Amino acid sequence: MKNNLIRSIQSVYSDLPIEDYYVNEIGQNNDVLIVNNSLVFRFPKYKNGIIQLKRETEILNYIKDTVSTPVPIPLYHSIVDLEPGKVFTGYNLIDGVPLWKESLDSVKSGELVTVLAAQLVSFLKELHSITGDQASKDLHLKTRNPREEMYNLHKKIKGELFSYIRKNAQEEISHSFEKILNGKAFSNLDITLIHGDFGASNILWNPETSRISGIIDFGGSGLGDPAYDFAGILSSYGEEFFDMCINLYPNGDEISERVKFYKSTFALQEALHGVENDDKQAFEDGIKDYR
Image (cartoon, rainbow, N blue to C red; front, top):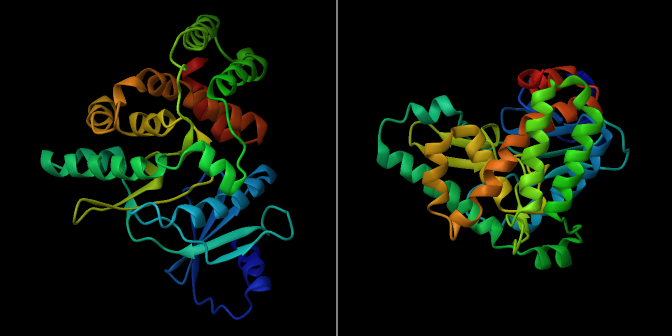
């Protein structure tokens, strides 16, 4: 597989010297190749990921002067032959390793944990400062309606997953969706540019300095509800760190209900991804607590 990916790179960038390379196993939607220990090449695994990659490249070029935290800057790309394995983007490797929950828990200084929370919230405030109207005009992004998206998600879960889910869990899922959709949680909601997959695997840090070193994988980025990014923090790091972050965000208490609801859907979204892309591991990981 990796030899085919290298051939795809060399067919477009024949003058790029490739001395060594290896596959990075992290990444559900992309095959990731590290070249010369200095470049990252991402290849979408699925056809719908190709559209995402094109949009992601445009978004990264758009936000690079707005956010102060390092993000991937596309240097290489090929979006001509629209086939998985041939479409790619490449950028300089950002130093750091994923900030897993175990890593965060290993930080003994409460002051350093507070600094990490402040860095993450600072990045989100900068990203979320790009309004939906602004990004829609400049990037021609489709404006999303979060309430409508959650209504459609519930419909898909019922249609594609309920046959695998035990009865009482079906009832709990439907009650959760109906409560949030029929309540006031989605009223007066600001649409902004969001990361869309703001979880541990995409947050890089330097363990020696206990500082965030970069944010990666903007494949799910687009116009949406800022609460969705905080759901990634809640899912990755738990209530205590989430509370620390949400208290640093302007009017954070107003979005907390939606944050907790979004987080409750993540496993089901993973199971749906598995069904729709014939990814058995993703399906099993997402559905296991609902059987």
